[in-house]
Length: 514
Image (cartoon, rainbow, N blue to C red; front, side):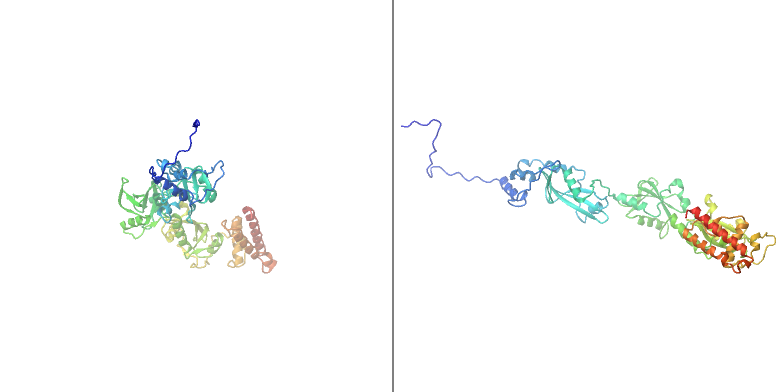
């Protein structure tokens, strides 16, 4: 009998068939089935596909390519051992300041999105896939151009469909998107709210006047205007006042998110809320029995009245001395209107002694007023004729007659002293040469050698205009052009005029730096 070998056992005897029942096959759990599904589709997008390893760096960490399929499924789907809580990356996304409401295409939210600055972006949840999100970036709001990026958040980090890298933080992912768009991304929503838009529509109204507060007496600006003119003045942030002519108190209203509503004396909303500012203003017009209110816009009203002056039958483009020489030979009361400077006009009229009187005046929103009256509180005249009659009455001038209708003056006042140089001129004073000579000699008699007056130009003219007038005047008075040359009795006078004209041009060139 052989001794048994210590510590070693032989093979177990094979049980005979039928001696004990076979064990039933182990039932596959639901969790294992889901793991198989994840193995083929959730993690890799198809059976047998492999994830792309990425080299780690300061910003990016490579995903664990060798990680088990089961653990990978848990990271994404959150089932099994990880099902008790969401991945930390999900919370990082939802706690980010850029996370907000969805902005699907052609939605109202997308319309508001376009009002932001270039580079504005928002993170929002993909409603069709758990753990997936979008980043929408505004490329150009005017052109309604945006770009949308999709990414997934898992315990591994953040990955995008069009980027092989897996980012360790959301900020790294956003930096990657910034590189692609070449924009400086921002999550600050600068889009105006509806209240902002309504306030902006008030301030863009042509009648809005930021300085027309109650301390600046806006009702005085409307005094003398036709009925229906109005001014909108600021009151406090979203509240405003509508001032109307002949109305001592304004109509207060507020711009709200839903539109524009009238306020009572206690600043309490009353009545209907109008969706647009125009409809609110139309309601005020209807209450006054008017069809439409007219915005008070200072510049446009001034321009309208200036056009009235330029359209007058007596308006002329003559210069100061040209007008003087023209009127001096006409009957008393002969007048013309001219624009002496930009936005400044002159009323030139001949008095009973043949002397020409000049009065400057301006157009205002309310009408017309003498230039001196702008510094006092005189009420402007509503029409140009009323202003002319006022000037004539105050200065004791003859009744005004448009210069084109005035008669040539032939009587000479014997008491009037004739200037010595003008008296020596024997030529025809009505010719082109005669007008120039009389103008210059008159100035010399008055000891007035203003270069602008001698050339008959004003300071508002540019170099081309002044030079053109100088050339014409210099050629007309050149000694070589004088008929009869030195035998002409007016030769010395005309030569002197030519000298003064050329000197005037030189002085003006030096004065203006031409």
